[in-house]
Length: 154
Image (cartoon, rainbow, N blue to C red; front, side, top):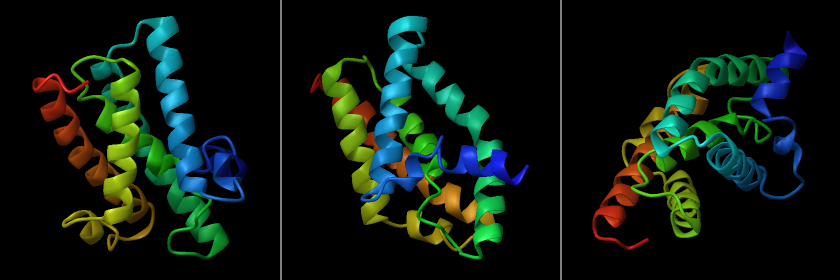
């Protein structure tokens, strides 16, 4: 079970990228979402639904890896970036190269900047804290992406 948790938490080992594992996890999230959109006609809200489906397994896997590695928020855990980015993409009014890029940039910006209450969520215990700050960063990204779509900026 620990190996399965590690597989999920590192998002199929993207978390082992030598530089920028969070960015690597986010890029993998965009690629998978794009593939699902292109080849399975998954709409933006479908990507958001996947984020909600992944929330429980993400918290569980992040918690297991954090306990095994004895770290509060191990850098190799990137499933939180996947969930957060998919939440951002769920708000796209249309999915095109501009919305994919803008969603990626917005999510990474809010994930790194951590405006209130994103940073507060980090204080939650275990896997919940690891994942929920990225969920909130994803919500902020979604709000900006939605507003940009309303104004036809992508």
